[in-house]
Length: 300
Length: 321
Image 1 (cartoon, rainbow over the protein chains, first blue to last red):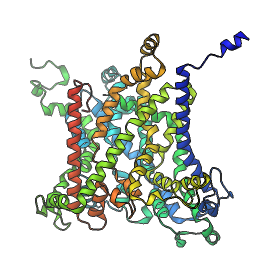
Image 2 (image 1 turned 135 degrees about the horizontal axis):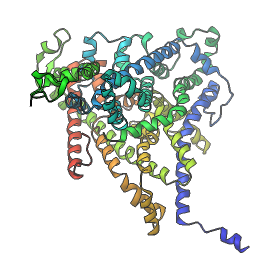
Image 3 (image 1 turned 120 degrees about the vertical axis):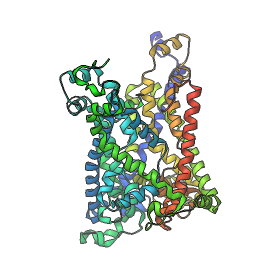
Image 4 (image 1 turned 120 degrees about the horizontal axis):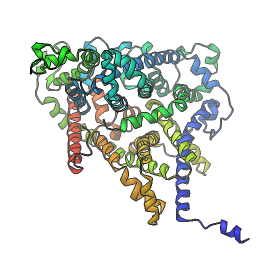
């Protein structure tokens, strides 16, 4: 009996402290997850259950009526296709431009390094702003084209500096000396040595670009007018801020007949449809993202 | 003195590495940097050149340099307009509020995660808390509005669940609650993600310091305050400088999306004002450019000042550039 009493030590102040921390963290997880679960549950509930506030945690009168409307909506499809296009090609362009700038700037023996780096840093402190950018883009004839979405924002200074820091700190300088002795060119060195050795930072920057393109709202809002070019985020905002669904957009007549009942659930379904691709990819790439933040935190 | 560099140096250039010599030597690197450099000059410096329309009466027909100079006309118009005080103070209050709430919370969260005994809970909690970062602003704003709906949202449901009858006040339609919605939805989205950098910094805190403090009888709480927190101070300082450079800038997207005709008195900020005056309804490019320039100059001065001060205070240890 005495041993039993002994084993049950009184709670120390550290135990209490830990318990408080656990409680705070759990509370925060509930705050983060509950709205997400709620939205998903609403998207699988009937429109009337949603609009009368019956959904608390799990779907009420479960069904996929909301999703049926979303997927028979023409603009949603074109928005999805556009977003995929912008995300794939925009990210590749952005990655290449970033890499082509980061690599020369990471070379300590590059004579133009200081001047170009200064030019880059100035843009971190000052920019022309929205209106002059708009005038420039329309002067180039790029407004209302797919190209503007792919090109604008291709060079993010922050990403470039993260990449440059990685090139500088993680690729041994001796390697360059050795490669030079073997007569390798600067292009060859970039392709055969730098890129293979920089897979972590390249994947991180690529993922940053993918997320940025997928979620982009501002640039398309400013520069696109043709609805056929709109990415999903613009379509989503347009549908969600309207009180009624544009019947001409619905292809399926059967869906159209039952639409009134499902409008409310449809909005939730749309939110889920627009977000799921990012959240599905997320667990697989999470480690990369963390790494990216850490690479970026090293001063080069 | 002449041909010391051996075969690679040509006799003509051997006296000193002239600029031409260096460009000739590094021509491949210059070629590589050509595309991004051209991009930088066109899309980052191009608008800086165009910002002169803030001092002109821009008309698309005459072009940037062809339009007439009007000096400070647009700046005076903005500073003396009825909206100036409101737009400027909205921007300032909103970003200060975001800073005061949004800056320390990720630090606190990181300290809490780091002090947890269970490694497993720490990992799960960080993974889950990053999720909202990947949700777009459009979706996040709409989720916020859906959740806050007094009829069908979590807010309304809980109100009735705990005995309220009918529908509670619709906060979304109140100008006075715009700032709270703006700031706290931002905390929901960014707190976890913003804490990563501090968690990383905390993981490199020396265990010896903790052991020594333990021997001196410091509790875990004391060690958070006197070991963990001081060791991430440099990281905090750098991120603080970065944040200060944006004190007078409120991002366009979220403010614009949360805006409605009823909350304009608190939700109209400089960026949305520029958009509406410059592009949307009035298409007064010069006026929009002037307001934007006014804003970015203030930001630049702030950033430079904060950077300079911290540089002085920390003997060059903490600085951006």
